[in-house]
Structures are given as structure tokens and as C-alpha cells.
Image 1 (cartoon, rainbow, N blue to C red):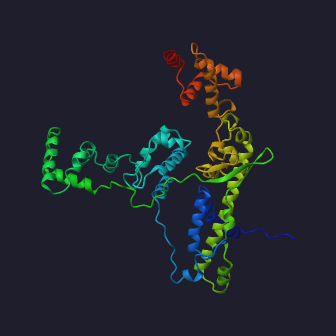
Image 2 (cartoon, rainbow, N blue to C red; image 1 turned 180 degrees about the horizontal axis):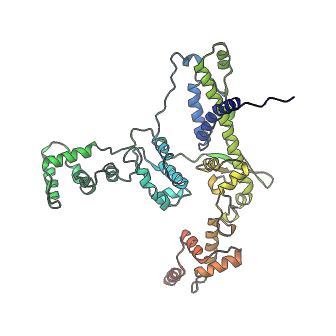
Length: 447
């Protein structure tokens, strides 16, 4: 039996219907992918309170159908966090994917007040980006809303908000006299005296010193600036490390599994479905579709996470057993995506900030990203090349340390790694190793 061909109109209609189902689910999946299972479970609990069709299997429903009848139902809105507010802006910036990744990571270091805490070296300790790469995107962060976000000090925060007035008296006071300004706020006699002292300091510096009225106006303007740009947002601090995957030894081979089967904890509520069959209502039908989309995305989230974990654990069997970085197999994220039929963006979201629990006599937790080392020179990872250089330098004599050219030749002869001298210099410096001249000098001085 020959079926009639679809007309152009019917084909378009079918395509649009598919989009209507796919896109909401895809949006949900994109949202879930970077989250660990604790954050996903928290999100599901929030949704279950608002949606009568989403049921938690292990406990009584926390939301009854009668509690959210369409006549007065309004979804509970959650105040966005500062990180969520910034990530929306970052996604719209015309920057490289590497810069975008660094910017999003940097937002996790923001304090509740909106300040960047700690040092670039500490930022880099938990990221694939270097300290210099993270520091380079700080100005991009400081250009975002709210004004002053990403500052490292109160002074920097206020100066960011005064960028459009670089030559104003207000900017001068914040840049060079902020401590004096703090003593000039109020109406007491002491404050008036301090204002006069500040004006005299300005007289020694400016050709046309400001009047007391102009000085008071500039101080008043400083008081209108926001010293805590993040205070109007909820706060999402850097999360505690929570592994989503676990690897266990099984017959001399490592097997991977999910730490938590979140998708088995929720399902559609049969009671709510029966009520909808009796009482047709567009609002409730919309809620039902939302619940279905979320459950579909949840299944896909777990499936993709497990597929990536299984691929990486299978590929890094030797490393998991030895814990020696020299046993790591180069595994760029593009290779994972091609092997599993997933997009590069999906792999990036899965491995970013996600961790693997290695079960054994002494459990340990590894960043999943550490199992995805890029391909370096000679098929080795950059970390492996650094370790090989360190190994060679540990064998050198004090009187005749290896030059970079000699290290290049030894890497080829001993390990089969063809690497140019200038590349040796790069990896030697990344490993924090001095030049041969400096090594010789330091060793002779200490001997």
C-alpha cells in the first residue's frame, strides 16, 4: 500500500509540532546538564511544589491539585542569583568560547556583595584556565550589570561606577582621597573641619580648588554610589564538591555508575491525570506538558551523564589503577562528542565542574575534566610532557644541568616525543622549572 506523499503544508505542520515538543525539552536539558544531582533534586522539589502533575515517588506529594486551581494559580517566582543574572549577559557577549567559559567560572568566586575574592592563582586552581587567562577577562566581568560587580576593593567598585566621568572631582576623591572622604560625611563640627582639611589638600594639587559647596556635592555623589552591587540578588556560593559518578574496581576493570538515580524519584501523578481527564483545562494541560518535558529531559540528563562517564572510565582504566598522570590517555572533548554522537557543547556542560568518586581502600574524588586531557606534542598530554621534563631534570648532574636543546633531544631518544627546543622552554616554565643556568647557579650556591 502506497501512502500519499505529505504536502508542503502538512510537512511544515509536522515539523512545527515536533519543534513544539522538542524545544521545551531541549531547553530543560540544557539547564540540567551542568548541575550535580543535588542541585537537580532541589530543582525537582521546587517544580513539584508548583506542578500537580509532577509526583515524588518516595513520599507524599507536597502540592495538592486543589491548592493550585487555575482560578488563582500563580507560579512561585524565585529571586535570581547574581550568578544567573550575569550568565544571561555573558551568553550575549561577542567573545570567544574560552573567554565565555572563563567568565562564567569567575562568577563562582563572587562574594554576596559582588566582589571578586581571593587571588588569580587560587581561581586557577579549580579551573582549566590559567591565572593570566582568568585575570584577562576580569575587565569583561566589570563591564556587566550591576555596575561595580567584579571589583576587588571598595575603591575599584566605586571607580567602575564613575567610568564615564574620569576627570570629575568625584572620581579624583575616590581614586586618591577615599579615606579622607570617609571622615567628611555628616554635619558635625568635626566633619566640617575634616572637609576644610580635605579642601586644603586639594588646593595644593589643583590649579582651581573646589569650593566647600562643590566638595560637599562631590561627597554627596559618592554616597549615592552602590558599595555592594550584589546585595539585591540572592547568593549562589561556590558549591561543595559533589560527585555524580562513581567508579568501582570489578575483576581488574573499573566500572562506572551514577551516584544517584534521580529520575527514578519522580513520575507523573496518576490522580492529577485522572482529574484532568474529567475537568479539561488549558492551564492544567500546560502544566502537564511541562511535567512531561521535565521528566524527559531528566532521563536524557542521566543517560548523557552516564554515557560520558562510561566512555572516560573505559578509556582511562590504566590511570585509575596507577593514579600516575603518565598513564592518562589524551582525550579531547571533541573526541568524546564524536564517539558518543553528542555535541561539543553538551560534553562541555557535562564535564565542567563535575566530579567522579573513585572507590577503593582510600576513596578519592577527581574532577571529570581531569580525565579529558588535550593532545599535546607527540601524542602526549601537556601534563605528561611536563612530568617527563621533570623526570629528566631530576637525573641531571649539578655541574652539568641539561640545556633546553639537550632536553629536546632526550625527550625524543628516551620517550619518542619529538619536541622543539622552544616548546621545551614553554613546558619547562609551565612546570615552574628554572633555566639550566639558574639551576646550576642555585645548586652550586646551596652546595
